[in-house]
Length: 241
Image (cartoon, rainbow, N blue to C red):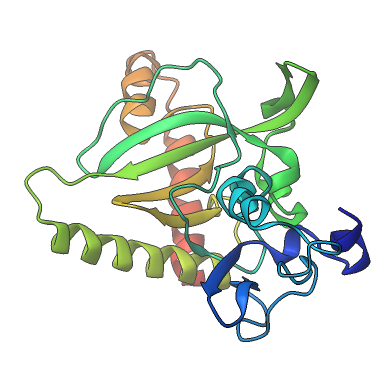
């Protein structure tokens, strides 16, 4: 630990990898930064008086993922996530949403400290609350994680759809900031999984919405003026594209 502190080693230096050779012993490198320059924070493992031993280095490389949970950044849309890297989700004990043609959506809690502040305007205040964990409570925000799954599609077709959808969502997020559009948080690859993350919509999906308002239409509450207002808002969105 003194070596890490002296070398100002932080979470930002993760992840690390190690290389071993007979000539140089064990060298530790940061995958993201200074990949060709070994980190001095672990000392020279050949010097037992001022270094980590080989077993400790191996253990750190294997266990580092505990401290390397994903943080969704304002300026990053897409992530490729290592299988060992934790996702900052909390199980809310909710049932999965109805499965659609393009995949299945899950309602989970996203740790509030793992999403940057610019996204917070897209969350309803009532959708942020504390959940109990073994050592106290944790603030989370409700999000929808949509796992892409196309029935009968090949892996190549799924990948093409993922690339196209990600590009479209990126364009919307960069160019169209409108109160009637939910800005997506991220798209990520984790092994064979392809996922999108959005703020949770309390009203459910469009199919569920129209199923609920059938009674409203039959009672005459969906008036001509309401229909005109909806049309105007759709037109306003179209004019901004």
